[in-house]
Length: 537
Image 1 (cartoon, rainbow, N blue to C red):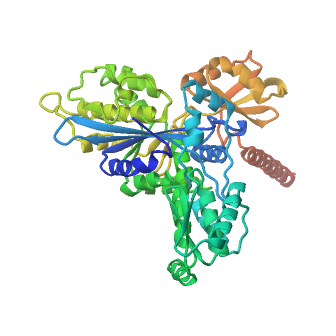
Image 2: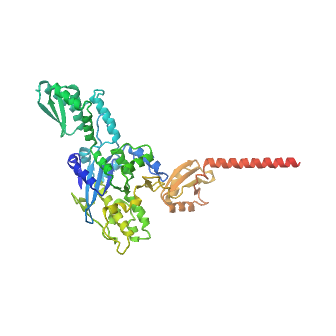
Image 3: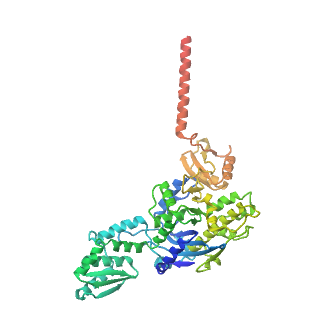
């Protein structure tokens, strides 16, 4: 494991990019500054995929990533072994001119991170900058306007002092002489100082080198020749934005090589990764899924896979099914480390550090990423081996076989406490298999509220309740057993009555049409009877 901050990011960057390029698959985990910033965005058993996406999209407008783990698994040639390198990145947004993002640090999330020894100093002082494409385009436009003198910006006090110092030096400096200013901790000040030098002095050149601004006194002719090479300052602006985007180059490399990505219960991680390193989250749920699938064609969610395999092996292999009983990341990884009679399990060697092989660092993004990758490798190996004939079929599996043995479960992301079990990133979401909604009414015209019904039904299991009108509510439960118990126990002696809800049967429009039909039918019958009697008389 390697902690990566802005102090060592540039040194490690080429190694990280090389590891990504040569990887078999990459596991990812994130930690963020908030989880639920408004109760209006709370998960509900009534949510379909689009509704859940809209809730999370609104919620995540004010949440940012503070740590990201990449655990890179590489199959060792001619060996039943994987070499793993894990990078634990500390990340934080940057600021420049109009780009000054605001985010929430939710107290409960901060307490959670503190409880698991998150290093807040590394985050605040050493966090690597990042910026998505949309923000970079807007910033580029603003910076070019500043370089052209079309927009005014307020310099920091430090930058103003340095600019004054440059003016005093330039007044008496000889051609060819240089001065150096140290602004290592502030990318923006270095850029704006250079921009002001560019605008105010026609005999000075500046260069940003390793955190220092080097200024040279030149002839007017040399300055003009230099400006001709980049008249609008595009190169200077792009270089500055590239430094501010920092970690984004890692995301771009992931997208470039389209490596299989592994998450555990990864919906929140995926949305944050998309928002922070690619583009603002689109309004359209389908557009989000399509764009994400275009970037990363093969994504696995180990929580979803474990849930599906538990059911798959329920009758075929009871020990395996039992082992997958708890799909929480730490419990799942612990259970998968146990021997289950599956041959040729690949060994893992952790490069750079064996810290994660001999300790519990749960909720450190790098460690959770490593556990996620380990779970995927174990699940894919167990599943592949148990599909082979018991006699003569078992053998070591190649990295490609491990990656594709679970292809049937790819691009399906777990959705917890919703009407659907998973989001399908490359197609239409499957129809819900959850228990049917219940319509609960008060007997004897009694008015009821969601709170009253929730209190009465909570004893049967996990439920969500939403109002329908003053006399009825809709109830969604998390299990069929809970639904059956509610229908069974709300008998004639209960002040509440429950029935299966039918959109057609219980629709106000359907009822109106039914009553209208009944009245029309009755009216026609009366008219027909009256006409018959009148004729006979």
